[in-house]
Image (cartoon, helix red, strand yellow):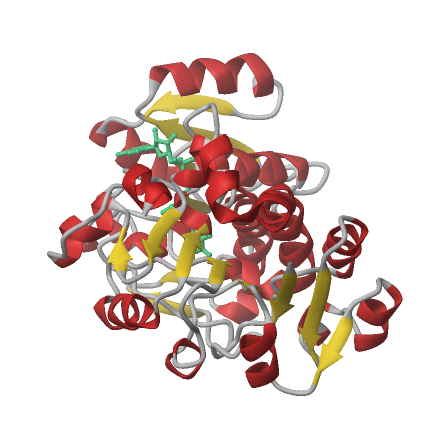
Amino acid sequence: MHIGCPKEIKPQEFRVGLTPNAAREAIAHGHKVTVETQGGIGAGFSDEDYIEAGAAIAGTAAEIFAAADMIVKVKEPQAVERKMLREGQLLFTYLHLAPDPEQTKDLLASGCTAIAYETVTDANGGLPLLAPMSEVAGRLAPQVGSWTLQKANGGRGVLMGGVPGVGPAKVVVIGGGVVGTHAARVAAGMGADVTVLDRSLPRMRYLDDVFSRDFKTMYASAGNTIEMVREADMVIGAVLIPGAAAPKLISRAQLSEMKPGAAIVDVAIDQGGCFETSKATTHQDPIYDVDGIMHYCVANMPGAVARTSTIALGNATMPFMLALADKGWRQACEDDAHLLNGLNVHAGQLTYFAVGKALGIDVLSPQLALKA
Ligand SMILES: NC(=O)c1ccc[n+]([C@@H]2O[C@H](COP(=O)([O-])OP(=O)(O)OC[C@H]3O[C@@H](n4cnc5c(N)ncnc54)[C@H](O)[C@@H]3O)[C@@H](O)[C@H]2O)c1
């Protein structure tokens, strides 16, 4: 198969769909790989790195879209890229179609087959191609939160680990899933006093079994949540209710009960955020002040560490990418029901029920699409 990887063109996107190592593996499997010139530069991979791995370099995205059987990317194709997709071509990338009717219309019109990273599943009921980005955002949260806590940034001027004779910062993490666990581990590693609030008792049992030396757990009742938030120097929002907007757990009125200069890092901002006062910010201008509480609400946190994020995403996508290239999408999806869950669009038809419901479009079941 000819695998093509164009440079990402969405503003502020520095990741790339294929690492040189992924290209090398695909080539070892007998495939041809073409990467757009400077495609990996934002993640620290030069054209020479890809050439060394055996890949070809193309001068433009148009050449890649024209020649490749499968396009591997990171972000959803932008309008100009969607015009270059063609019938029978396979697209493997994040799509997030439910809130995006324009993109959905264009993908259906193109006739391509599109497999979305975010709906591929695993045997544990997880989302293996979303998890690496949650791991990155979780580990980054205390790092950006500690910066936000510094005086020059409007914060309380509290050091995460304290010093001998001075207590550590109090960090409260709301939501103990992938983001929350990684955030709590890093905050604890920085020496902070960390409590994780969640509503799932099985999850808290797991966290307590594995991490009780590092952080405490507490049931996320409304009463416990506000009590902990009142005491906190930093609050990290990491809740997720699958398929729904994040619940607003702290109201604007409750901000006044927090310590002046406390930091909020609302990682759940990509689902609307779990604080009433959260609004999405960018890496250029990441923090703002509401009633003396500093908010960090960047919706694409992994972009700040594009190299780590690219490699982490590449590790997760590689086995699926290789299966698609080796077997073709039909056989690969027939052999792996979790990969079939990633199928969102095939030959002008939507094949993912939740997207169809959100957009009011008829859906062809993915099992029937395999036979179409
Ligand atoms: N901003 C970014 O760049 C970025 C990057 C990655 C993920 N995210 C977002 O971070 C959020 C968390 O993702 P995740 O992968 O950790 O999800 P997850 O499903 O692994 O964990 C979510 C946790 O929230 C808990 N929860 C649900 N409702 C709750 C409530 N009312 N109070 C307390 N806990 C509650 C669940 O029990 C679960 O343990 C999502 O919104 C995700 O989209 C954002």
